[in-house]
Image 1 (cartoon, rainbow, N blue to C red):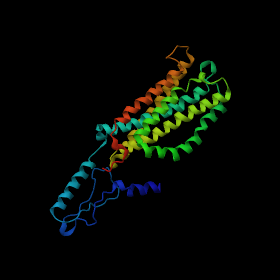
Image 2 (cartoon, rainbow, N blue to C red):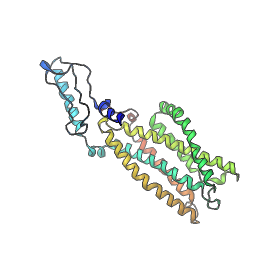
Image 3 (cartoon, helix red, strand yellow):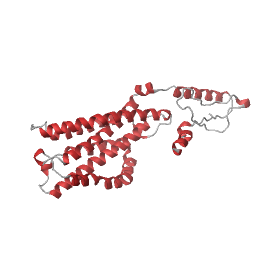
Length: 292
């Protein structure tokens, strides 16, 4: 609570600074304040706009700054919906978080599915161990590997690579017949099926979270992130239910390909692939945070 209170008053993005430390007071002209009267940054710390008082050019610069501040202050939620770049970032974030939930939903029920229905038929203890093994993998991947990947290729390329890895890993997940009929061999297969797509999904989620922040003007980050989280929450409520019901239906109904239990996994793979053009539609400068 204390950290949030301090952040509200001292976030750098809410303080408009100039190049010099001489305010426009006294003989140089009236002091200019960033009041943001429409309430977007109400109750946050106000700061002065500083310029060098060297004549009319400085006053003109101050006027231009005021106009820029007023234009930014008037932006609203309607402007967010009208911005193609912002909505692409929001869509990318919501879709990525949702596909991660689809993985977390389908994998456990497939692991417990009986062998005559195409699953490995594991018990609850084995399923728990397979799901838990991704934890140590994340502890190594996130602090050590992920920063290196992002530094080398950037968030967009890292996202695309993660989605491709997720697609390949999740596509072959239900092909248990490729594995020898041995308990440990099947446990190893299912563990890798959990680790590889799961790690890729987390990587993509981290990249999309950074992207949705970078496409947002600093004074609208709260609005844009709130919109992204709201859409993601709605999709995460409905989509996993649809996928799990579809899996239950195709698993219990003897049908030929493509209407088998593999179908649900492959639809999720198509979902992941469709996110790639959304990511590439974003401009290259989303790699850096906006300062406006």
